Image 1: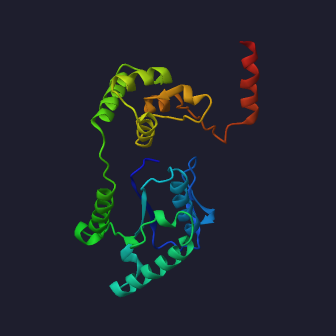
Image 2: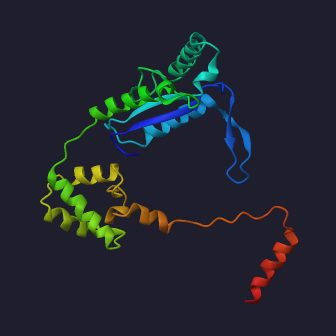
Image 3: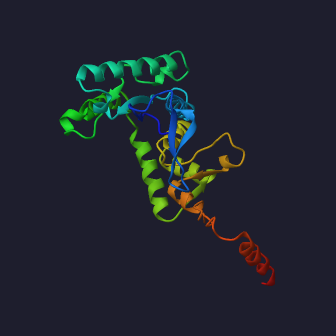
Amino acid sequence: MVSYAVVCVVFNLNEGLNAPAKVRDPTTGKMYEHRMTNLEFILFWIRSVFVNVRKGQNNKILLIGTHYESLGKTEQERQQRVKEIKNILWKAMKGKLYWDMVFQGELFTIENSVPFEKSGASKIILQIQKLAQMMIRILPIKWLQVLHEIQQLRKKGKLYLPTSEMDNVLARCKITDIKLLLEYLHDIGEILFYPDDKILKEKIVIDLMGVVDKFKTIITVIDPELEVSKLYEWFQSLGEY
């Protein structure tokens, strides 16, 4: 998780919190009911944010409910329903380790079928801006020089640097707070830095998308209507080569 970030957990207000969550099967594209409820899925994503950030980071989580206009015929009915949903969510989260990471001021709502000024989006954007202002961090110029050097090495096709070579880069830029800088670059997604891993501590990845490309896999889904006997015949024929 990137540090100093505002994370939005978005869910449909019309789907009951205690109802089974509707999930799309990635292979068939069909929807089915999951064993987890919508509430459990919301809490799952909040916990996922919490466990994937370092202690002391300032990440904040906003909860946003969609389909606001469908909650009732009048504004009073809709607001009452939002209040009820918020009470259930807040009761489920209060006292948990991740509670302080959740923005507790409001359960935000949004409606895509109406003009922007009536959708509720502006209130969400303003709140994100306020939180972002609190997360502004002043960086030493030397840190930006290191980032520039890393970007130049990336352009030359470098996927990673041995720790000794990274030390040379940091020495040229006269960096003294080495661990703090590397953790920062790791947090913002510029490098992969795992000093506590016996193997990974010897190499610092400087091209994350390059790593993604290396691990890309082509997955072939076999047509279920294809006869098993035919597949077996093809498999056996491989022995001839």
